[in-house]
Amino acid sequence: MEQLLTAKVAEHLYWLGRYLERVESILMETVATFDEIIDVDKSAGKKLFKRLEVEIKYKNANEFLYEAVLGEHEANIYTMLGYVRENAIVSRAYIDLNAFGSIVELYEVLKQANNDHLDIDCAFLDKLSSRVSEIWGELSRKQERNISDYFIRLGKLVEKVDVHLRLKRDKSFSLVVMEEIDNIVLQLNPDAEFVPHAQRESYDTILNSINAKINKIIVEQ
Image 1 (cartoon, helix red, strand yellow):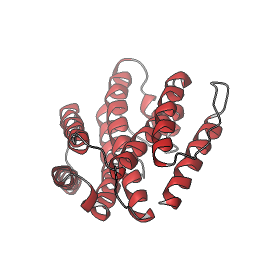
Image 2: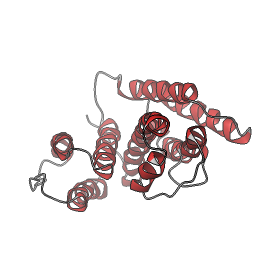
Image 3: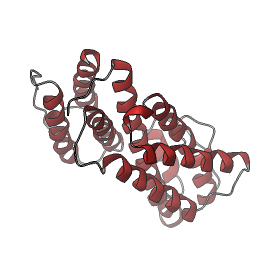
């Protein structure tokens, strides 16, 4: 795991992981919510994005898909993937070459879709999800882990907890993921000390604790 990283590179690797996980999570939630809009609750899409602190408008399920992917707001998948690309460019020397190429290629697909005002359907979202899964595979296929890989992994796990709590899901899952976060933090900083968390604690308390750990590690790189 011997590898020297600047704080800047470590931060970009971390946010690469976070934004890529966010893209994957929003894609999954969007497909599930599309079905809910059709079958159960027409306002389900608005409720989903409100939990992500975004207000969206749509007239039907198909318009919801377009808003989720290319809508004019900061939580759309196109914007999130742009952030993945930006962080990958800065840290490209530390990530798999194929993964970097796949990130750039996928961003160009969405850029073209945005320029062409493409109609978005579930088949398009399935293709995006498959490509994101492939990128994760390319990022994690090495037999030996470097420090850079752990920062990407941390980003993925922290975002997983963040989204899970924002969507008001079972906290027990988040606490299990936090155990893995703590294990990685310990590998990067053996002197780190942790305060255990319980399900009764608030979203803000849990996320603030995680962010404090991450910031301490990145600053000390």
